[in-house]
Image 1 (cartoon, rainbow, N blue to C red):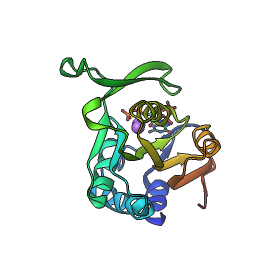
Image 2: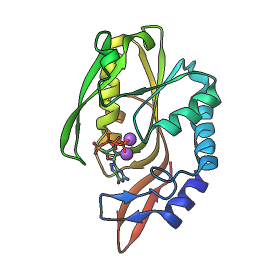
Image 3: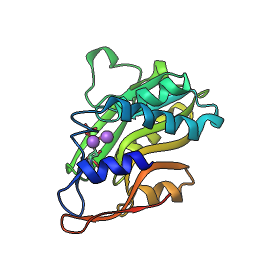
Length: 192
Ligand code: G4P
Ligand code: NA
Ligand code: NA
């Protein structure tokens, strides 16, 4: 997505060879019209798949899941990272290890909102090691639902997340694919 790549070049800050800061337009301050275009792009890619639910993990996947779900005319679910007292019983839980934060956390989704009839599209902001997607896949499997694809705004192609999804045969649509980056050389995109 050209408009997104332009934003990343203009406003993204490469902190290291592994970390890209995009908090002026994607995950702290947010540009809503860019988010809506992103949602329309994901929706167009997966429109033929009879998606019934869009899923993400709180917090920074939520606005992209919203925009995608709005464009597709289906609900979206965001998995919670903290267990609410009201969802103690009927929840699906997955344990997720975050490489970036070097900690394990639980994500939960109420059993009320996911069933074997669902055809799910996962949406997230950044695909790195694929930890959040892996957790969501476990929950989708536990519900007997079908994962139809994964849409990510930014993929760091040099990390392992994309490779493991390709190996599992899961269709991935990444709007900006970063082959390499460094504070000195800047960002090299892969063309999808
Ligand atoms: P994953 O993103 O593929 O799941 O792998 P990883 O466990 O490595 O990432 C942990 C968190 O760090 C994720 O946020 C992810 O979006 C974020 N992250 C990874 N690489 C970068 C990066 O280069 N730049 C930025 N800005 N974030 C990165 P999260 O745990 O889902 O938290 P939240 O931000 O959604 O609350
Ligand atoms: Na995220
Ligand atoms: Na994040």
